[in-house]
Amino acid sequence: MTTSQDLEAPNLFKVAGYVAVVTGGGSGIGLMAAQTLAANGARVYIIGRREEALQTVAEKYSSKGEIIPLPGDISHTDGIQGLAASLANLEDKGINILINNAGVSPEPTAKAKLSTLDFTDSDAVSRWMTNDGPEAWRIAYAGNVAAHQFLTAALLPLLDKGAKAAPGHTSVVVNVASVAGLTKTHSQGQFAYSSSKAALLHLTREWAHAFMGLSIRVNCIAPGLFPSEMSTGWSDENQKSWLGDAGKKFPAGRVGRESDIGSVVLYLCSRAGTYVNGQVIHVDGGLLLKSPATM
Image 1 (cartoon, rainbow, N blue to C red):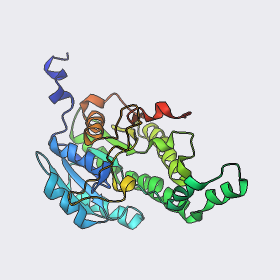
Image 2 (image 1 turned 180 degrees about the vertical axis):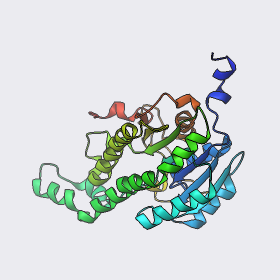
Image 3 (image 1 turned 45 degrees about the horizontal axis):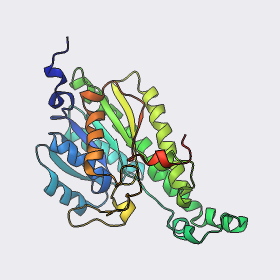
Image 4 (image 1 turned 90 degrees about the horizontal axis):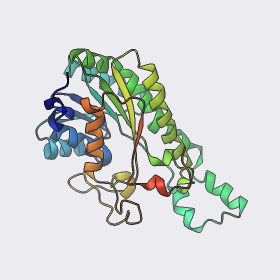
């Protein structure tokens, strides 16, 4: 029988003692997720290629829990296998949470030329669609889809082990996609980026189905506009970014904040979210309400 104490927020949303892995945890949304989990008592491994940035995050944001830098490159299988081996050595009882957050946006030319584009000129639109070349598509799908597929596969035994070590607990994979994968606008010409995020949304559902025989859930967060290195091009000395009043025309009247990501991460990764599987949560301040159409 469920007691009133079971329904208290500290028990429903408890992640203390859990072991989490966050890719791209050195800045932006990955840092928001890692900071939230650590603030609530989890041990969080942050993965990224820039060791100095990871170390800064670990020093500044480890609190009730712990943030541990784990430098590595998930863009190739050797890097992924090395990270999986390191985590297996560090965590003999497995891991409980994997947040696939790392991503790339490789189409700067198309975005830059949008303001001068004549959409009634087929030649101009044709050039705009191919400005960044086939390599942009390879980079987008390698970084936003394939890297998550192979890292999740490599860490699946550790997630399974983590679930078995905590009776009544399900391990969870949280993919970080984007509302760009849901809208039917041209996404400022970033066709490779937006379609790769749509692919990650679909992978979420496929993995959730594939892992039904395991105590591993898979869900997805589709953020709107948040301050990050991808959206601003920079981070300050605290690995944080700012967007000012860029979201004033959104229904929420602002861009996303740390607490907006953090609250959803806590929900999906704690007992509060154990009945949620294969779902996509839009964390966009109502941005999709203004989109012409969505999937």
